[in-house]
Amino acid sequence: MTTATKQRSDVKDLKLAPQGKKRILWADSDMPVLARIRERFAKEKPLAGVRMAACLHVTAETANLARALQAGGADLVLIASNPLSTQDDVAASLVQDFGISVFAVRGEDTDTYYKHVVAALEHEPQVTMDDGADLVSAMVFVSLGRLDDVHAQVRSWAQKMSPAERQRVIGQVIGSMEETTTGVNRLRAMERDGVLKFPVIAVNDAQTKHFFDNRYGTGQSTLDGVIRATNTLLAGRRIVVAGYGWCGKGVALRARGHGAVVIVTEVDPIRALEAAMDGFQVMPMAEAAPIGDIFITVTGNAGIVRGEHFEVMKDGAMVCNSGHFDVELDLPALKKLSSKVISDVRQHVDEYQLKNGRRVYVLGQGRLVNLAAAEGHPPSVMDMSFATQALATEYCLQQKGKLTAAVHTLPAELEQYVAGHKLESMGVTIDELTSEQKAYMTGWEQGT
Image 1 (cartoon, rainbow, N blue to C red):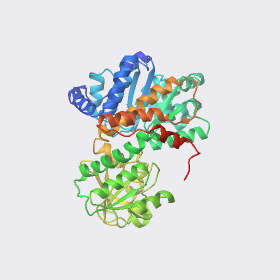
Image 2 (image 1 turned 90 degrees about the vertical axis):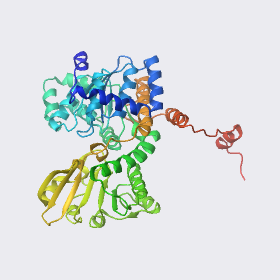
Image 3 (image 1 turned 45 degrees about the vertical axis):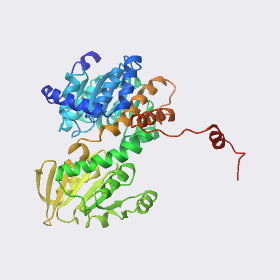
Image 4 (image 1 turned 180 degrees about the horizontal axis):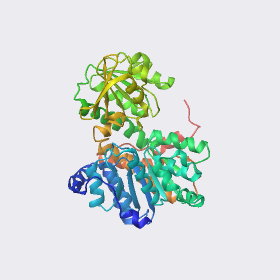
């Protein structure tokens, strides 16, 4: 089964491979830490013979992670974690130029998306990578026999298997990596409910990931998506940022840098207080809805902008999402409020004509605007995230049989390695503690 899977792929057009290879190598030139790990992996083969399935955004940056895993000896199948995040030329190049099995087509419908999930499951992975926990959740539902809770494509595949075979799907997994806030939340819920049967490394919780990827990457790429989709001047606009986690902080900071008046909505009093002290206006969404020009959700939750908010928005308000799933925007409610919906009034922009005569514009179909309308995070910041991801994979295999079936954090020394080499690549040097300073920091005898 594994050999057959490796020889298959489902991408838009292999003729796109030459352009995709250029994008992959361009990104690689700004990902020096990951390149260093890839070189070591090629020599040491720490992933030799391990069957891996990765459900990630198929971008040029992800392609370089896939190359590192392949260099380490992994037998990899890569599928898309979002229907609108795939770069078709990159997917083609991974198949054509690098011999990696890829199942990802930009704009794929739900049936195709889950057909690709099945392709990953058929690979019988021993290690998985997730961007949102869709792959792991499918495995858990199948192992529990809860086939009514999975998509028809997965259910049809699982129905051909005996209960013992379904258990084997999850029983052979050594561990998994998750790199999104949404996915980590889902996995912790699985752990709480006692259905998580293997260890998961919460890559998203690594400082070398969320401090940089979520803040600087999401901040820049989200506004890049908004600007590319609309060509709107941000200066002087009221931008409403829903959520002040690391992603929200990044978006708010970058929006202010563009000259926007930034409003933050929050449910957490600590984060709301932080936003207020950072100089942003803070208010409930109900108050922000009538005055905002552009709305950006980055919460990882559902139903953030709802019908009652859409109904009072000013004519021409723009709404987008940069959280993982499109459920942050209640688009079914918006459609009910509308007398007409015009798709693609501009590329990546849909116009909802409300019955009250106003218009609301939805960017990127409510999916990740930074990937639906732009190229995602810049390579330089993904260098750290994916270097951390690659090292987490190696660590997970080194700890085989030692980690409990729970969500784990990455050891600090691996993060120090990534941060240290990133600084080196930037030509930045830092101080080191003297022996006296180390003694002072670890002792108690010295005082005033």
